[in-house]
Image 1 (spheres, rainbow, N blue to C red):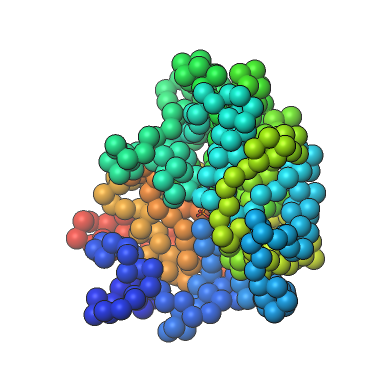
Image 2 (cartoon, rainbow, N blue to C red):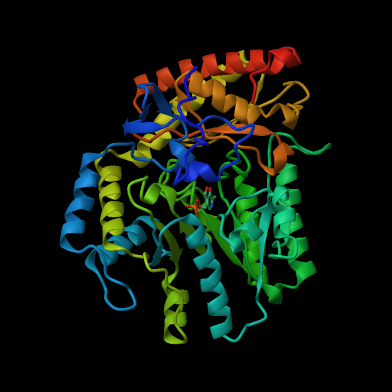
Length: 467
Ligand SMILES: Cc1ncc(COP(=O)(O)O)c(C=O)c1O
């Protein structure tokens, strides 16, 4: 069995790496990765893994890109750092302009951060500061979806629709008001996907009325879900409806595209799929740096940012925001997007991958649903395809799929949302550079993984892989 190279070395007195902080019991052993190239990673024992989910949907341009590495090295030698409150730097200016042009009208201003949680925090802080500066200090509340994921800072943890965090947040940070996410697979009785999405939009309007529109800053939603929902794609009618509701009540609509943006869904922004439901703010991260440089962004309209700048200005800044090396890395990543036509590839190769996953679904009794958009796909595991009943959470299907994946040369991103109460799924979102041959290899290994998982989940209790 591979994937047992290292989990945690209990005899290690100093350091131990990030994994020293993770739970030591009942966890999937983490391979010690040595090197990576393209869609592949190798551990210290020489085992090769396909990076099935691009880590947590980060490595969009693939690993070991010498052009990006060289661009970052050149920038480090020329200008490593300049603090944006003391000096401007050209990589920041050039990168912001390029991102804004790709995002299009409505997103002329770009505030850079060092990751997704920071971007989400800054989006909320920007709207809060704008509300105060324009004489509406009573606007404090943000509505989010149940389930959802927006980050791991204290504010974003409170925004997340994740019931397992309730004890952690109790008396510590106030969870944001929630409305149901527009799931389309396992639905309440008497609903189809369209009617349930209408119900979810009605819940948003009801929540705005209940809280009072004047108390609200924003409704924040992942326009295409990530791990929290298993890549739920809402119907277009839902997107138009939430846009109309937010406009009617003067509530900002914010798209968290930290995971689904940057071309993953086959368009540069997921928002570009619904031009008549354009959000007021978009957050990005992950694929911006594609693993090479820590980057995130808040995209906002010039009118809003310039109005605030003329009043109080935005007052918050982290030391590493708009770092020249990070920006040079982001710029080189965009060069690769252009050179390799990665946004179109996300659409075309995404279709091939989706077809393959649908074929696996047809042949596997434990695959209930395949969903997503472009090269952002999820596979939902079920105990019974007829009834859509999920596996019991105690069986830890998301951990088991990771273990069987490692044994078949696949590194798979999967963990339970809200303790598994909405079901169990894993993400299939390889680097956008994946070739047809590599898609075929991934699918063959995934078929073997699902067969092993089926045997494991279906066997007698004593036969199960020990977790
Ligand atoms: C939709 C979404 N929002 C926000 C975040 C937080 O981003 P980061 O991990 O870069 O802080 C993530 C990360 O997984 C995410 O998927």
